Amino acid sequence: MPQLPQAQQPLYAQIKTAIEQRIQADEWRADFQLPREEELAVEFGSSRLTVRRALKELQDEGLLVRIQGRGTFVVGPRVPCAIFDLPDISEEIEYSGGIHTSEVISLRALDRDDPLASLLPVPAGAVLFHSRILHKEDGTPLQVEDRFVNSLEAPAYLDQDFTRVTPHAYLLCETEVTAVENSIRAVRADPESLRLLEIAGDQPCLLIDRRTWRGKVPVTRSRFLYPGDRYRLRSSHEAATSSRPPMSAMFDINPSPRRIR
Image 1 (cartoon, one colour):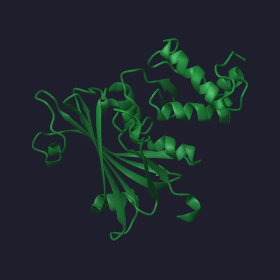
Image 2 (cartoon, helix red, strand yellow; image 1 turned 90 degrees about the vertical axis):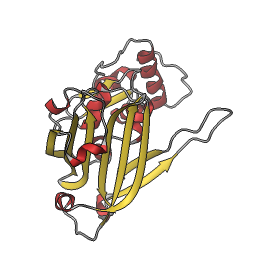
Image 3 (cartoon, rainbow, N blue to C red; image 1 turned 90 degrees about the horizontal axis):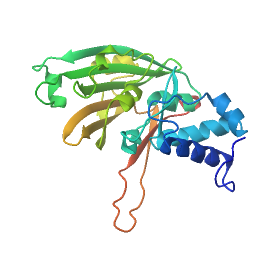
């Protein structure tokens, strides 16, 4: 077992620190694929659950990204932690013990006269990409995701198989974001979303509207629609210390326990 720093810490924290130091020292650089959980457990003399906890915290802090079916990768310094304010739904479902699947409803470039094109103004020479994806847990619809992407920031977006990798995970590795804005409100779903989510027309839904920028350049706009009885929302923030401003609120969306649905 390699020597770990700060041996007085819990083992998961020691593993987390050791991995973080490898990333900071460029031993594990951006896009490096981490060894499997089983291999890390053997290396550090721990259980897989202990390793998983360390990796999950590093994902939440923006150092790692887990891509379903492929593995866990180093994000690198170009993507700030703010991108993780909303966790990837596939990770949340798997973390709660469910199986994530997705269905691509639409994946296309929008014409400039398309009414949806006004949702994310893009610079001259750019095209606006749009994807609509239905996410499910164990076959139960949980989220309709509409995502609008500046083509100059992710040119290969339309070439991706979003049944194998989520847009969140893909963009995390491909784009640079310096500012994030989230807004939340209760809404009535449109007819297509009602059909996709398999809910009645009078059922309230939670809509999270998320915008991201690189400097002053718009990168994405994402609209996440959840059935109100299947999700709960938790927000948290750090209090300001000295002259440092408080962190922006972090919105943690978790599936409600299946037994109470």
